[in-house]
Image 1 (cartoon, one colour):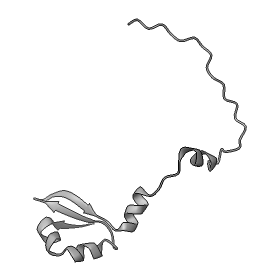
Image 2 (spheres, one colour):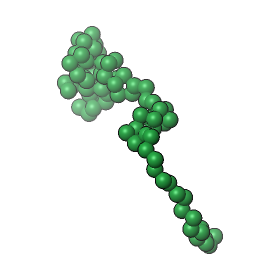
Image 3 (cartoon, one colour):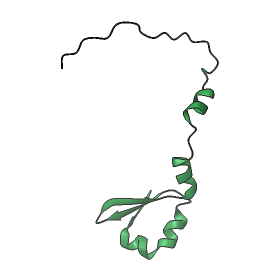
Length: 81
């Protein structure tokens, strides 16, 4: 990941944006990492739409298996308050 001091990133913003096709670009402020600029495609991969829980479970390799699940019937314990 290439690092850009903030003043250089501001001066060459178009170039920094174009270089996101090659990978994320790190922007530093006073020598410390401050931000990362990434391509839209990389961003979509990172935060893309996630399936809801029901869809996720339906696509599970365990979907359709007959699993016997029993609830624990032991009594609850006493708690002093």
